[in-house]
Image (tube, rainbow, N blue to C red; front, side):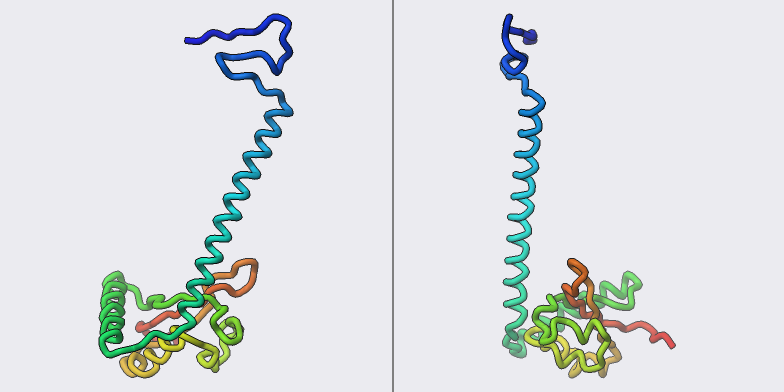
Length: 170
């Protein structure tokens, strides 16, 4: 165990405990400020990475995929498994897609306002998902709703597509 040593005639900042120099209050405040700035820089870096990933996702979703019969079969099989699992849990709806409002032609305004023409604002893969519902799932009794599910900074951020199969409320 090391003992506390103080040098005779030494100032407070030169006193040592073991092999560490005591920090003055000003040194400690400076250290805390540097640590807070480092944490803030890390958070900003993380936010920058998240924003870049979000932009990359929006760019990918804005481009329609080639819906070959094989690709469509894969999508439908995956959807069936998710729907079956949700039904087993007693759920009557499932969020089947989430995408940034930036890929809507009106940035999500029509969806947010429940405009009956909101499907006309869709582009890319969300448009394809809507058309899949319209052309194949609606006739099977499924309903589709779209709503804003995230509000960063109080502005519409992401849209969620919800497939519903439960009783309709009257």
